[in-house]
Length: 316
Image 1 (cartoon, rainbow, N blue to C red):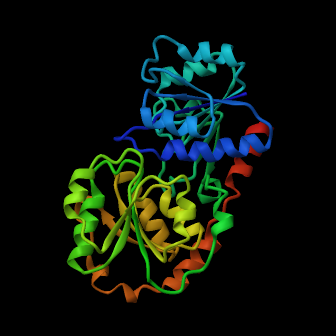
Image 2 (image 1 turned 120 degrees about the horizontal axis):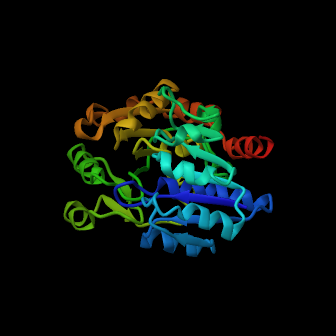
């Protein structure tokens, strides 16, 4: 039995939830049982219910009560997967008290060093990796298997998608919309389930911009476009893997390296941190070699990471 512990919100974003949904889909193919452990967030609850996934709601920040042991005993947990970025030491101690296997993802918290397996799929070149066994690099980046169904090569830029995360904490969608209007570039704006800037967005919209609200499959939505403008989390990796090149804006400082990595791979262009976006490219999108960028993304990235991670978990 797997415990999948995630923390998602407007400020933290929804990427952890969607990554673990992809992981849980794979677990189902292996007839593995699992329970999600979540913070009290209505959007998370709605999404998990829509996937018919069982969950427990707990105060994840309360490490003193040792609720972890209650969960372990109640569900006979053997593997605990933490997708929270900052596992603290007491929380890790509470889990390891039962001598079960702890797996963390892109985690630089004080308790990450107690992990049996630490996966750093999104931490491309950062140091300070912690854990007994380290799985690092894009070969261990969990991507949606649905990508394989919608993968295709793009030739030129006709249709553009703007998608800046499930919550878009800093309202970067509004900044990008203003830039697109400045350079007379039409686009479709995708907003996620926790998007908090709807009124401001409504004021900026014109007939050249269509809004798509939360869609069950962003991968399927990708297939309609030739270029995406995204944040620097997992979205551009999934887009590139499907053959969709991206213009990347880092919403968080730790996303900057992701942007540089995909630019070095020549599958995307990095426009910088959201506070100082390089808008030069918007003056002439035709200078982008969309054909080459599309091919590079599909060659570099794939959806096999989840299988490799599962094998590592089971063999240890």
